[in-house]
Image (tube, rainbow, N blue to C red):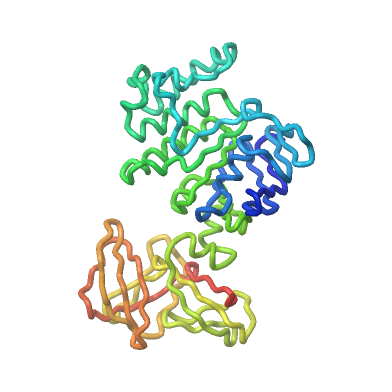
Length: 361
C-alpha cells in the first residue's frame, strides 16, 4: 500500500521526550493535518518523515518501502525517500529565478517529462509572468506558491508542509490556502501538514490528528473533532468556550444556559460543561431565538434571561457578552449584526451539538 506509514514513533532530545509511541497513516491523495500547541511534537514528526532527523524508535514506510527503522542502522537519506518538503520560510534560492527554483534538483531525464507539469502549475498559480524574476521581488504569497510547486515538481510520493501559511497576512491567507489545496489534490499525493491554527486545519484536512505532549489524543475528520471532541483539551483547541461545572442528576446537567443531557455520564458525576459561543442563539426581550437556517437541531432554552454587557461587530458576526442574575458572564458569537445596547435583556437558546460535557479532571 502506498502513502506514508509511521509506526510507534518515539523520539527524545537528550532527556526530553518529544514523541511517545506515535503512529500515523496518510493515504495517497489524502491530506492529514497535525494540529496542536507549540512544543507538542508536530514538527519533529514531520522532520522524521522527511529524514531530517535520525529515527530512534519505530518504523517509517513511504510508498510501500521501509525508509527508516529504529531497529536497524540503515536509513534512507532525504533525497532518496521520494519526499516533497516545503519549509516554513520557503527556503527559495535567491540566485535562481522562479522557473529555475522550481526545476532545481530534478533528474535530467525525469525532469524533461515534468516540464509540462511545471508550466501548467505556474499558470494555475498565476506565476507564469514571474517565471524569470528572482524570489526577493515576489510577495510572500507568491514565494509560498513557488515553494509549493518546487516541492511537487519531482512528483514525490508524499508531500510534507511545515506551517505553510504562517508568514502570510490574513487577507491573502484564505486565497492562498484554497489555491494550495486545489494543486495538492490535483497532484494526488499523500500530504502531511503541520499547523497550530485549527481553522486552517479544518479548511485543509481530510483528517486531523490532534497532538498534545508528544501523543496523538484524537484522530478524525474536521466535523468529528469539532462536534465530538474526545476531551476538554480538544474541545478548547477549536476555539473559546463558556465553562461551567456541575453534577449529573437524573442523566442531566443544569447550567445557566439550560439543562443538558449528560452524554452517558452516571448520576452524581462531577462534570465540566463547555459550550461554544457560536452555539448560542439570541433574541431581544421575550422573543424566541431561532436556529440558523439549515440547522434542524432542537434548541435548549436558558433557565433565565441575561442582559447584554457589551456587543461588538466582527464583520461576519457579532461578539456579545451577557451576564446572568448570579453574576456569571457568558460569550456569544451571533451571525450578522446583533448589537443591542448594554442592559438589554435577551432570550438565549443553545444548540446542544455545541455543548460538550466531560468528567471533572
